[in-house]
Image 1: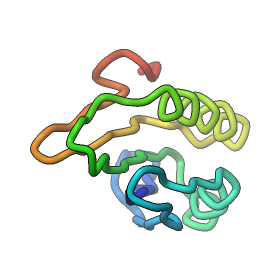
Image 2: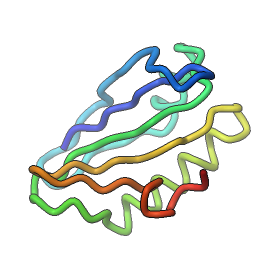
Image 3: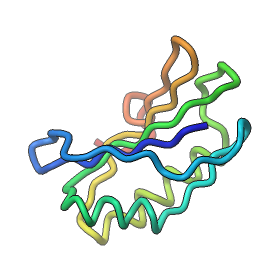
Amino acid sequence: ERFLVLSLDARGRVVTHAFMPSGDEGETAVYPRLIAGELLRSGAAACVLAHNHPSGLAQPSKADAELTHALGAMLAPLSIRLKDHVIVAGDEAFSFARNGLIAP
């Protein structure tokens, strides 16, 4: 799996993008402090997270949902808004925001 962080400015434009350290085929090792550090360095006002599921299933796992919630809660006091978390699998994608799992 690969985990991508897009840093956005106040107008929602991409400022930077960074791949976070990867895990193996079945799991990405995601370190919230590294994500926060990347976003703070870029001066992000918001962010979009994305990762792939090599399995071919774009549905989020329980761990994906827990991570998304935890990252949103961690970033809020830093004034960085989590706008979306997208899971890509083959030709399919799942958006937490589009599915009502991240507040607009």
